[in-house]
Image (cartoon, rainbow, N blue to C red; front, top):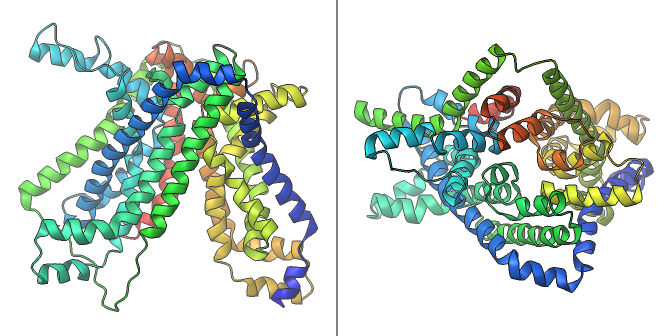
Length: 528
């Protein structure tokens, strides 16, 4: 029966999958073509003036943020899983909240806090004298601080999940053999947590390498910021494509390295004796120290920024700066994000379905090709679409269709990561039974498969919607004239240091993101 099902590969779904994969790969192929056909003088000029600096800045920023998120994420996960203290269950989910704060929002908050004459500098001058200065937010340290505070939940979530499923028998066996607590941690616990930690750090590094909002507001030169400057400031598409290709290669090399490292880090449970670790009690003083540490991290990454946004929004509303145009920004954001998320799910469903049910070379290749957006940061994909549509389809250039296409290219991989597991949980026997009763393949998909995977597809839609709401570089480059979203308004106002005017849009992005974020991670919380 399965062989017969394979022979009845639905032509319509195959054509949709092939067209979707080709369209998603087109921007990446176009960027590579533009860069490789650029004049040698462009490569020479960039190598002598920009590329070494950009390589150094991007690499060191990714490395420093990785170290920071490693320390924060692992330590926070360790405390909430291995210790019992008041409010522990609340802290478990609260430490995820920084994911609702876009990097460009956190960047402009810390530009105000750490800037010249800001609250932190004033407090430091009160202690150290009127000439004392703190580090500038427009620096390597400032960029590291902002990116670390915004991305540590990636490492925290995956490490916490690994610790919750950790077999404490390994640690007990090591201690029974005379190993000290430090040796047990370094030689037993840490190696077993390594796959989860590496997966979290890979998300962090890809996020840092492709980020535009924070580095642009902090004026820290990385590849993404340089691509945007070449396209919008100097109108040099050849130079922008060269820098884009290098950024794509940077991300691709890292992805391949991470996959290789993850394969070598696999381990399996080989004994039937499995015990979860009991949580320790640190006493009143220990609980106070742990709570203080968690509160300091959460306050710096979410609490204080949210409080400032709320305060500025109230002030802006009282002064009448929030007018009817603000409703238009909300409508534009919701419209774009909703259309992009719906289109991505509709286009991604055939890819995931065919790759799981008809795993031929063609269907698997189409499915893997759809992940091209992973190595295509926002400014790079926007640059490719900007040139493509201006030359090949000028009648669509400057419309929201181009912007929706950019969102799909960039965020469809995130949706596929949710849709594919949902489809894998549905046994093919149900679909074969439906076809044996006379339903066509499309009928089976509509009446049997889709109702069973509806939850996973809704989660994919929500995830894509959230990312589209926060997306900035492609929106800046491709939006129609006068078509501003909440993210664009935050960037425009914050780049001119109009912090109060940027606050309402920033606060609304955070508020709209929170419920969906809590919904997506609620299953992980119940694991405790």
